[in-house]
Figure 1 (tube, one colour):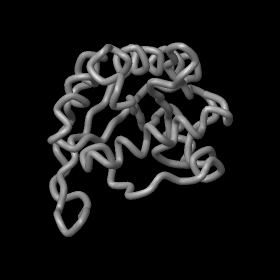
Figure 2 (figure 1 turned 90 degrees about the vertical axis):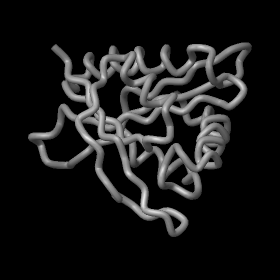
Figure 3 (figure 1 turned 180 degrees about the horizontal axis):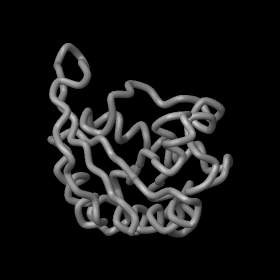
Length: 153
């Protein structure tokens, strides 16, 4: 992913936000805010005919040095490309890239209603650690979040 991909990446992020089941975020940030909130490595896009179909990136879970090998996963696929294996390719690539950069644990927080995302992560070797009940309130509704993780061998 390059900064020049941001307009397409942001549009896909906004599609995810619009579902109400992808994130607690209500708006997409500008490039600078997004860039500063994600690791500089392991930023991927999937393209077809020059158009971005999806993206994946990592963010820190903590600034503490002991957690330097732990990162949170974001994977978003354009509505027009869902169900075509784009998410699977992005997540597999993210696992490979993250391991090359010393990440040993990937974690994901997913709304339980987002069954496709839970299944995608399970297919990539993530396991359900537990459910964080009533973790955040969105639009006046308390939402649970499934905590999933993948550990490198």
